[in-house]
Amino acid sequence: MTVRNPRLAIEIDRQKPLPIYQQICERFRTAIAAGHLRPGDRVPALRGLATQLNTARGTVELAYTILVDEGYLQMRGAAGTFVSPSLSASQMQAVAAGGRRNAPDVSSLKDAVGEKETYTTPNVSTARQPVIAVALSGEPRPLQPGLPALDAFPRKIWSRIVSRRARGGERALLAYPDPAGYLPLRQHIATYLGLSRGVTCLPHQVFITSGYRATLELVLRSLASPGDRMWFEDPGYLLARNFLAETGMQLVPVPVDEEGIDVERGIEREREARFALVTPSHQSPLGYTLSLARRMALLNWAEAGSRWIIEDDYDSEFRYLGRPLPALKSLDRQDRVLYCGTFSKVMFPGLRLAYTVVPERAVERVGRVACSMNAGAPTLFQSALADFIEQGHFARHVKRMRALYGQRRLLIAQALKQAFGERLTVELPPGGIQFAVHFAEAAHGPVDDVAVASRARDAGLAVLPLSNWYAHGRIRDTPRGLVMGFANITDTKEADRLARTLRACLDG
Ligand SMILES: Cc1ncc(COP(=O)(O)O)c(C=O)c1O
Image (spheres, rainbow, N blue to C red):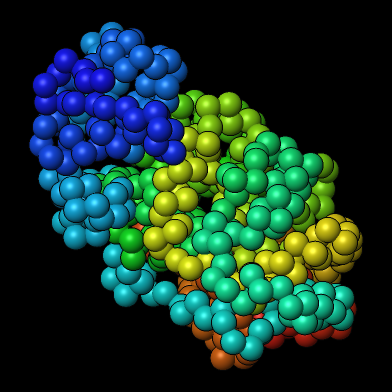
């Protein structure tokens, strides 16, 4: 069966295992790659193509929606649907070569560095600020941001479960893992998210990765195109910023206030960005919760332009005041949100297991990229984690840690207030396992928080300077402070000792 457009011959093979909407997508991609369809060409109307192919209008609509998401097509309302005029030659060649379709084309992105209103954080060394090395690996150090209580993890139970699995003789454990993740773990995650975060999803939408940055890589290789811009919270998660700089994404810094990311300012700065990367439950590093009004505004912005929101829900399990707001994803009626979670806080970061929940329309693409990109995470630990959850240890551990961290945050807040007095503003963290404190301006000007953090590092502490988390580096008005973790502080004595050590670093 062929449509009339002689340059676009679509044949549907109903014997093929590939669903019809995917066959349609493939035909469009190939026609574009071969130059049979050029940027700006009008493509057949939904109804017309559906009739031609003797298939449901919804099937063609799904294919078109996917192609719009991928950046191949552009819908212009009553005027019709067109091959995206901005489709670059490199993108078309990538398709033609059967290469990493939609993967960020770093070479072409790099040419675009430095445009008005956006910046590409090329790498740490070229950022206009002194940046303290973020060495989070190796021997854990006091006050290290993001580190859960290592003393309170139920190691015996975990060791028993891991060794039982290792001894079990299951052959699949020794073979290559499923790149999308171990199915029983994906099932547990889907159930858990439904119950605890209000996220409705099916296991096949859950992809297991080896950490948040691996999640970002999977998502961007699947969905990003050359030249794509991304709203990035300002201040925002330092490691993600550095990682995104490596991928060549163009970051658009969007300010954060007490209501979370300022969506209006984002629209003013770059309405046409294709991604927004946000931490709605517990803004990193300031700790604010994205207000409901902003959540709705963000979703509306994404829906209006078929844009993607990446929700980083890294530590929402720990909330000490009031009830946790459900995830942004739970409000996502149009499926524009990619939800990202990690086991680094609720279990331990050495486990290197995280996950993303991808919208139905992106499952096939992400699955394809997951297959080509990696060989999966170790089945031994995924299966042990599935057992840990199934046997109820996970829920018990999270509950215990919530109570423990609720107390430990009081210890550090009190100790800091006592040690610093007026020179530091300390607000009790409402959630998470790390927080930001702000220095009051000194008589001679703003405190050099990079120098303080550097002295603290020499004293064996792992705090980070707050000003480094801001996109434009340290200017006069950049807030100064420290970002630190509190989950490993065991008692008042230790909290006091650490606070006093930090205080000694303030004046050099
Ligand atoms: C803002 C934020 N997102 C995500 C993560 C999780 O990263 P990973 O899964 O690589 O441990 C962290 C860890 O500290 C974080 O601070």
